[in-house]
Structures are given as C-alpha cells and as structure tokens.
Image (cartoon, rainbow, N blue to C red):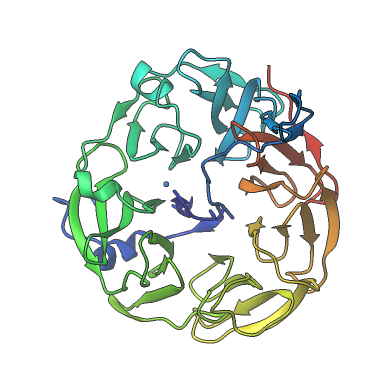
Length: 402
C-alpha cells in the first residue's frame, strides 16, 4: 500500500503530500516498537500598527495613536490534508471565541465541494494557538498539532485524545511524518541531538528516542524535517543554516544539500531517486545565486541540476506543491506559479491582493485538483484564505466555508 506521506512541520515551511513510502524503511528509521511496526513557518501574528491623527495640546508634541488591523472573523483555515481524491480535512480557527481563537475542524467527502464541521473536545478546541496543523494517514488515523501538544484520532475524527508521548519530543520545531504502518515525530533535543519517536498508526504506543546523526545547525530554534520514499529517508535540520543526513541501505550518512548553507526553501522526495528543491532563499549562507530556481536530483539527492527558473529575484517565502513529477505549483511570495512540464517552464496562476501573503499549507488530491492556504501574518490574529484549482494551478477560486 502506498500512502501520501510528507511531514507536517511546526515552525518550518511545510511541504505537501505526494505518493511515497514502503514499509521496508521502518527498520532503518526506528527502534523496535513491539512488532506493530505533522512551504510553511506558522509565525505568531503580531499587531500591524497604523498611525492615526492625534489631538494635540498647546505646546505639546503630537502623539501617535496605533490602531490594530481588524481581527479575522468566521473560520480561518490553517492546514489541509487529504487521504483520497474525495476525503479530506481542514484545521483552522473560528472567531469570535471566548478564549481568543478556537480550533475548528472541517471534513469533506466530495473532493472539497462541500465541508462539514467536526466537533472537537474542549482541550483541543480551546488550545488557541495560530500554528495548528493536521495530518491523516488514512480515513481513521490522524493527528493534530497545536503549539507543543499533539492530539490523535483513530476513529476518523469522532474522538480525539492528547498523545501520550515523551515531553521532550515536542520541543523546538518538531515535525510529524507518516509512513506505511507508523507515524514519526522528529525533533532536536537539548544538546543538539536530532531524534525520532515512533508509534503504530492505529494506536498510541510511542517508543524512542532514536538518535539520527544530524547536528542542530548551530542556533537556538532548530527545526527537524523528515521525509521518506520507499526504503530511503532524508532528515534536514534548519536553524541559522541547514544540516542534513540521508538513509540508504539502513545507514544514515551526511547529506550535502543543494542551495548552499541556507539550504532549499522547500524540497520533496517524489520517489526514492527523484528529489526536487526550490533554491533562492535569502540569507547569510546562500550559494551565491540571484534567482529562484528549481533543482532536481535523479540519484536520491547525491547530485542536483537546475531544471527551471521561477523568479529573477530571491525570495524569503517559497513553497512547492507537487501533484506528481510533472504537475507542480510553487508559492513564491504573493504569487502562485504552475508548471505542467516538471518545472522547466512556469506561468503565474494567481497573485494575492498585496505582498504580505504567503503559503501556509497546500496539497494536490489529483494531478489537476488541489488546494492552497495563504496567510497574511501582519494581522492582529493570523488571517488566512483557502483557494482551489481544478486545472493544475492555471486558475484558482476561493473556497467559502459556512
């Protein structure tokens, strides 16, 4: 059985699902679990002040009054995940809410044409963070991460419970990845130890940590990101720069990333041998390039070659959404670009109303049908919108939730 499996990353640009994985990788990823075998930084939103006219007393200097942007209302989507062409979920926040932001879940069984609200237990509903995400392995088994808490369901979202996992697992920029029969949490522990915790898909039985030989990248807020395809896996730790390792034949070895020490803005393992990466992320450790470009590997990441250019300038925010090796969508700043030839040529399918929007989450459910969630982090509370395409990214339409 082949599953959609890419990590959902907390405090890191997230990738999006694509078909990968075989159960044979598990032995190389985890300790024994007794035989049973979660592009996007969710930045905390801050007020965006505007200066208003002030009443001035005689001989007094003018006093500026700040007025915050209007807070969002209704349902604000944050994270999307499908397990088939028809069935998927969207996690978001509902306003107004007595606790500020209430986590809210929507479910579809018709490919996103209609959405139904799913009730959540109070501890999850009232978690209140702006960095919530979700990941389902199949129609029954799923996970929601909010802040430093992880919740799981094993009955299709009817009930949720907080995962019984070691406290140190949910530190720094931890991420969650689903494989054929297991779910993995990757994190960087104190002392810059990159580790994995593992549980079977169908129940909460976490084991670990299993140490992965990737340093913490030399900074205070590392993010660990695991991706798996077939019998191979790749681990990237992002902080001031990026460090990485790859698993081949059951052994982890250092992995030289493309794009210089900054590493790629986003990357995906489309198969055991084919990897794609977006280069052109601004930062102090760049590879000297001046454009945003697609790099492709056909040997499991050993070497990369440039296969397309997306923008003549560098960008701080870029993410890649792949339906397959041929149909790609990239969120570069406020624009959505689409390619139907594996990244050689790109056209603009959508431009956001202003330059403050960026990609939070996205996924294709078929080679032509997909979704993307865009965020405007300048608001007092993170404002988001979800778009859908039925033509591989050539055009996009807003999704309206009741």
